[in-house]
Length: 165
Ligand SMILES: C[S@@+](CC[C@H](N)C(=O)[O-])C[C@H]1O[C@@H](n2cnc3c(N)ncnc32)[C@H](O)[C@@H]1O
Image (cartoon, rainbow, N blue to C red):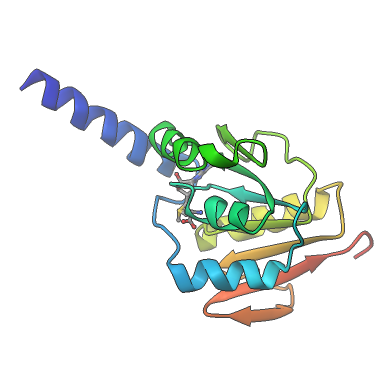
């Protein structure tokens, strides 16, 4: 009984605790993963950042295409699952456990996110300040107000941030 209580408490802390910092865990579905990678249009050797990589589903799909991926994940259980799931691609994949708002964003050609509407303005500001431009932002489900969507597929939107403007 004590063991079960501890397990439940750990799960609650890991999954509910994330709500203080960002979107809860909800995996992107397969058609949207494919749409996101198609919109990002990365070449093998390019780098994708995933902000809140969950169980590593998108990271794995991108790695299979030869893309380098850096996945940030706050929930330690999900970060561990993502790390284990992508272990064959260790040379290409980095899973960073922590709050992506606080961690440095490494150089990449595209960023993928599936957050919540209330984080989109903050995300836009962060990407505007991102030093490695041009960069594509691919967002599942939620749009950035006041920024024109460049392309859209299956509920996934593409934005491009250029050096100027
Ligand atoms: C809606 S889920 C999307 C998961 C994954 N990107 C996918 O598309 O399948 C959002 C993920 O972001 C993580 N997350 C939320 N806020 C975060 C933060 N500030 N830093 C790192 N991860 C965060 C959550 O734990 C969750 O796994």
